[in-house]
Image (cartoon, rainbow over all chains, first blue to last red; front, side):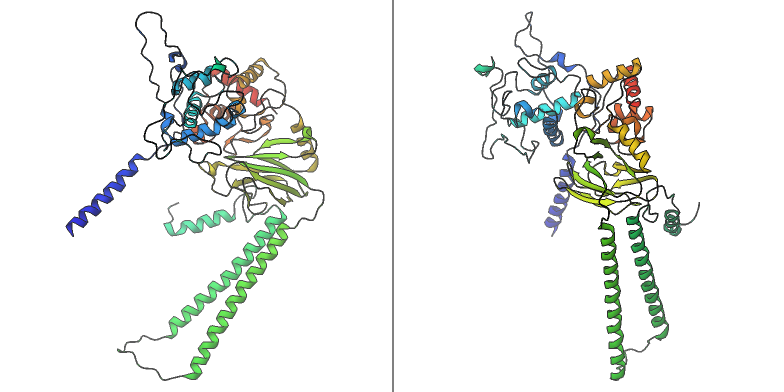
Length: 184
Length: 340
């Protein structure tokens, strides 16, 4: 009887604690931070002997399912699909494979969106707020299966690469080295 | 002022009865359809009132008649066939009256539904209303593309003319409800439907989304401006024009700001490069009374506040914050206010 009471109490406490992990939607975005574009390094070469430490490449938005689904919406709305299709590519390179011409880290993708890239990628600097750039970067990473399943959009209307449920190792992108011949 | 809690509902009811008719109110109809609905409301009200009074009278008389039973155990009653028969008749007739009353109300509501739905004129004004989270896209379709008017949240209609409304939704289910005009109508995503209304009295009538549609459901309002035919036609002519050219250096700079910042990613101003259709058409934004789906008055201050920090005013809205430099913002507001 006493054991049962204790178990019941434990269950009640556990169910209360579980709700502490609730994901928050960030509706009111913080004001734009420092100019992050200047801190992103694309080449591995530096002048001088010591290399500059790489900036943290975490993207707070890729931890939030809401932000990733916002990114998915913006991906359609800002006509990314016009060139990249739904990740499969077309005029622009595909986003759902392992090849990343300008890097697969959130900061790399953000910089690609904001700065633009040669051969057709337009610059969205000043055209979209920074947080939307980060949301788009998070969604682009989800296309390639680089986000945990818990946050990637669960009902995409198109192809989506996700780690299969039975897979044990995370799919690793090949990064900057994997530039396909035709884009060099 | 210090009336007790029990009087609050009464006071609320009294307030609702005497509300300014220009506001939205089911009991102040401004259109024949809303009149039919009001008629159904009052007839149902009085029938139910009569039923309520009869019930209370019957209950009170029964309570007054029966004495207090103090004996234990209860006395065994004699079999009373005459009394049983009378009781059966009583129950049967009560059931009969209830069924007839319910049937009567059913017939009345079907009749009202027919009256509200039926369209008599063959020469209506047609409006396409598309629901978005959280605003209304209003367009006046025309077979010629350059004669199509697109605006947002403010519907202009001529009085004494039937208006056919085609409905659709871009995201979730919304519901179009202007209580002084007609009943509710749901806007379903991917499904076109139509209804109609006609307004007798010129005026501005408010409406509201009546189907919960997300964070800013409560701030998804619209207004219907009913005006004489000549005024309506003048409004149409004005709306068909492309956006006014900036007349001052400030306004010219404001247009530059609009076209080099996030604004053009979502909004249209006809006559400029901005042509995206994800947000409201701003070609004649200064001609509207309110902004942000009837949330703010269309003043310089409200516009500036809405542009800089919309998430403070309507958290969750699709509009992104725009941290513009002060003079850029000033110029942008001057430009937007020039778009009559």
